[in-house]
Image (cartoon, rainbow, N blue to C red):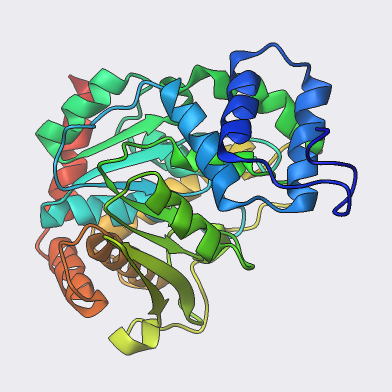
Length: 350
């Protein structure tokens, strides 16, 4: 806290070593919630650097049980853990479509994370009866056998649960919202959702520092990994040592719409609650995803196809987004994406 200072004149950025030590101390639990909250807010005011995010993420990874670290050709989808409250989380649909193409997919998610407590992949998967695990060994087995697995971040790093109340009390996003999305295997290509603003460069340089061979950081709907349909979505692709701007324009592929996919409105949430606390919204989000996988046409399908195309490009399976759109469409129309969902459901029943 003394290093950060009380304002930009008397403070400085943390070094990698200082960042690692600071976040390790937070995760190991000796600091008070007041100190942790003050530290996170100070970082938010100052603005977080690549070195700081890299140090935080490595401290988290060193304390986590991260699965799938020896699986080749893996792509990890990591959208915001505090979820969405305006658009349905279509990252599950995109992940199933990607697995239907033949790429192994690991989703890292969480549910009801404050302060937003929005809908996430975890809500959708549970509503679909498709399975979410807290066990790294189990999810690795799922990915190997079925090409798709989803794990709660707190299953890999239980210390994240201890920060829930701090996050709720602070009431705004802090760098923690980025760090938790980076608790993923470093050998995997990664698709990372980012909020609007000048954060893309910091995010993509961080995943490069963490050793990822490939990835795309995308400013999708609600800060997620699914491109919007009304306008272009901006991103940056990491391909080895190269960083290349990415623009996803749905009209280029005949997928543009006048409106983005929307969640139904059931009235404002109660104080302290979010979309994930509303069972009707959870059911609606699950229904939207199932309709896409079962062949319904409309904005949700278009957005899910674009999301899958981004994922396939990030994984290096397709050289261009156009190839990704074509492969994703075939995965849906042939029923292969639905076959993946059916296998996941059978697995849960067993």
